[in-house]
Image (cartoon, one colour):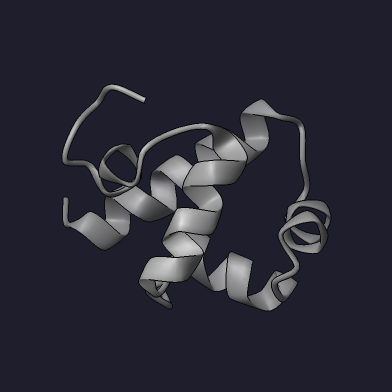
Length: 72
């Protein structure tokens, strides 16, 4: 699995664990829902600022999001 696939999987898992829909999370992060959907489906790679936005929102590290560690 590559970093983008790990990111996609973990973002989806984190979103679902909070009971959030794609549109709801996108609104909370002030990003487009289509962008979030593309991140979750490996069709788009987030820039570093967006990756940090996800990490901060979910209280995890960017290393966790891309699979460098399994420790949140």
